[in-house]
Image (cartoon, rainbow, N blue to C red):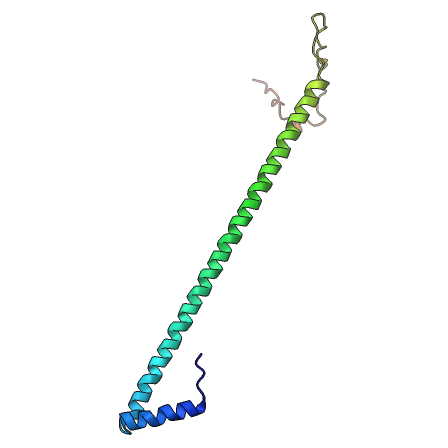
Length: 137
């Protein structure tokens, strides 16, 4: 941060010893050390805040690019689905012949044979079976 060598520190220490005096010099040095530590913590906190804000800005930028890409993908997929649906509808309409004025109606499907139902092998398994009638005396 500061380019201070050992000789500069020695000159500052001698001047401080002369100006402050030997009795108060340890207390002043302790106070300066605490202030210097606080200043370093404050600078580190500011650096960390700036780094976090830059990361948040980058994440927001990334989020907008991803949302734009997702929107473009969704619109292209919906466009393709709509085009395919319209093509299929056109093909389905072209495959169905339109009845003319003299067209015969389509034959009805054959009705199921109305014969007697074959009895089940075991009357206990038949859900429609009635209990045998009891004789009255």
